[in-house]
Length: 201
Image 1: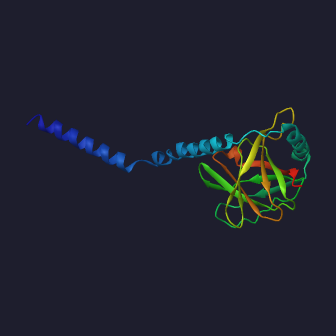
Image 2 (image 1 turned 45 degrees about the horizontal axis):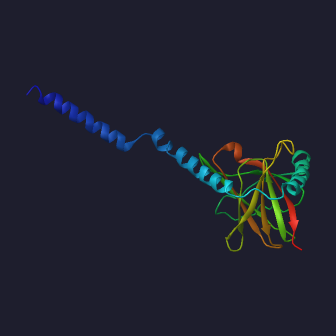
């Protein structure tokens, strides 16, 4: 009989521990978000790093030098991107403009948004950013993703204000949605400058 009481106490303690583990705490509920979001960002970064380096960096360097002037001296245009799933009413089609983009917050570790771009000529465009993370491009009418051709990492001696450029071949008078994501607040506000990188002949 003396052994039975400690056994009952042990069984009761184990049951309470199991119940508490099942219920969890607010801290435990939030903590899985961080690894999940980090995995999302690292997978997107991996896809971005798979883009080949641009083959003619000298030509793109000239484009970036011009963009750098606008990154430092403007004109500046602050914009807040449309939340994913919402109508995209924010337009970034004005040439030679440094758009200061802010992404809407979706959750503690998720910032994402879209802006609209309508090129007036067909050709290659360089999307130059003040952050290392890139972007995805979609045709607005169909939702089809546009292939990005290459990526250029901006050397600090070329421009200290800009970090990376992504080049894509776009058609005139076709609306595109530029999609940006981030898990870090520091990457959720950045400068975007769009410059022509090559014309169709």
